[in-house]
Length: 546
Image (cartoon, rainbow, N blue to C red):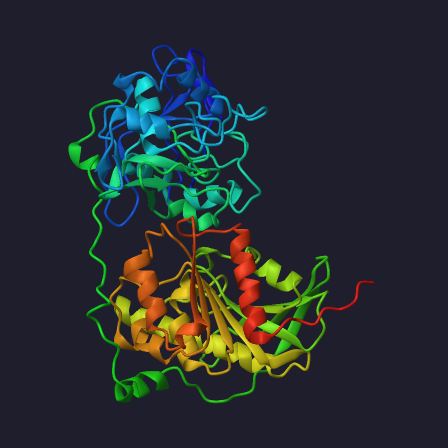
């Protein structure tokens, strides 16, 4: 926090990584908006930086209290605030038709969860949610501002390593919305909650009929902070809110247009390799049988629902030993049914396995199943640099990760408290993408569950292309996906993967949830997951309560 007489006291965070001298700017209160922070002109962070002119950005998400003023002052009756064409599923609506849709639970104008045109008691300081993109844009115009462009959001939020640190103290995978500013997710320009709490509507279209949202929400995994998401502009979801921006100088038109996306691979025309070629690909993932030299390094008894063991054993290649965490349920009876977990892309960026993803795993353990969480090659503490082209590095990484999963089963087979005939694979995001390769090369799995996965647009070598492996993966597979996932769209990614799997039609299921990518906290997904495991592994044996 820095201030000076006559200047606004500023609170912001900055990183000294590769930047030993930290620069900052103070500005006077007079003539500047009190509830906004100045984002100076500069480039976005990333592989293709874009220069963004200076702009002001709301310090916090727009609250229920602020939106109430818009409602009370006739915001839903004044046409001058509603200047964008009103569309629903591509069809034009009259202003009167649209206003009939923008009502609360009692039919009064207002956000979807309000009643009698008012927010609930005690919720004044919470972000306003349950509003469409059109309502957010109308409020912004009423307040003399605008919705931020995608590139303004990138300039404000995606700032090197700092943003990765901010998301760790932001409202993700939580129990609900929090009042604005409750969490300490502060960025380098003084704004809060750009990551987490609620997603935020942005100005730009993603593709026709969809407007971008960014930042992730309380009911999502924290890597949603950097994942583009989108929704139809009439959508009034409970986890989407917004904040406003005010440009210091006009934005170039190209920063307000549709965000360019590369065309997806057309899996209707691509075909997997034939059996002869696949046999060659398949052999890359085999390895010689060598001693495991396994050790239980630590045991943690602090959790009321499980015993946690930290284990290590030799990999199939030269390099650091494999670390794995085995969670044994206090409520279960050995030999345990066991789920092997392949984590999300967070594991590639986190430095320490102290931050394990447990969103979907805790219900499995509490239900009486064991979970093995191996630290695969390239994840957490097991990062190593590789040489070669990007496709070559990807192939090495893929082979080593798959071998690590298979080696983990080798370890489980040494334990009398594990039922080796009842093993499940669980892949979340990156783990779901890798599932076809794992399941086609490892015959000891009996069933699989995948969360927010699909066939990727990425062009990779045939030896690492899931399309070539999916038809040879024949175990029953449950896919649980977000209907609005931009990373793995429903029709061009999710359904093609489900159709490509070699399991019988009756043993494949796609469950769609009203979410994007990185979803957590859906009771329906827990129910589906447990029912699927019960169906193919049988109900778990549960010990009598003490």
